[in-house]
Image 1 (cartoon, protein in one colour):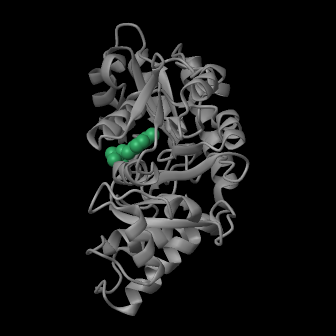
Image 2 (tube, rainbow, N blue to C red):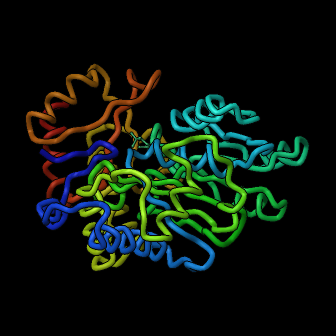
Length: 354
Ligand SMILES: *Cc1c(COP(=O)(O)O)cnc(C)c1O
């Protein structure tokens, strides 16, 4: 079965086999070597200066990393502006509410791009200390324009928190070009690991001001202990094995730029193939990520029909979220997939719509 959902992804044999390594106690030096290698490779993935940036690992899915980032990096007394144009922006707003963080939400329709000029005007008018935005809003496949927002935040001394869960490893992220203070992500999307390990890439100076609103996901404590080759709790050891192997493979294959190019080629192949069958992209390619694209369901075909027919051929596609479930379906090209897989996918769709 090939997974075309936005994570977990189809594994390479190399990563799958890494799960079969020796049993490991998380209080032994062998585990801390693994943790150190994962952290080092995550910082190196975007060629960051380890004196300025660190990777904080945790056990959980991508949401754990987003929650750890929001609950920790907005300091006591901080004011957060949340940009929402999809499910994941809404999730950050819920996290802020749950922790009692003073915040406002600037909402856009799920098919719409955020208006960066209007957001900057809001920052100026209302003295926010932090802004949170989704980089790749997986709800629609839209790649939000974080660079312009990051520059504006940087000029104002405002910290930008980025949910990079479905972009880290495959899209450009200009960590040092503006106001980014933290990016949350996970092992099992563009990095091709397994679910269970998540992380935040964070500026060390932001950690010194971090709040301690959460116990298990407390980012400053996790960072401090990990720097001391320690861990507060039992980590998902096997997920760390897979993450480290996936990061070695990522480097061997040419890092994020090569992954970007590979995903872009696959996404374009799918777009062109579906377009030839009369199936339209929901967003123009230049507004979309290379990681996932949303498509309009062909007339007279329900998502369930399409899903079940493709599953019978060995492909798992993904529904639209919320109100978009009746009109859209989504195809992600993350994971161990190649052009011949996409040819078979298009042929399978062609069989159904003819
Ligand atoms: C997948 C995803 C998440 C996290 O989802 P989990 O199910 O917790 O892994 C968060 N944000 C975005 C943009 C995502 O695509």
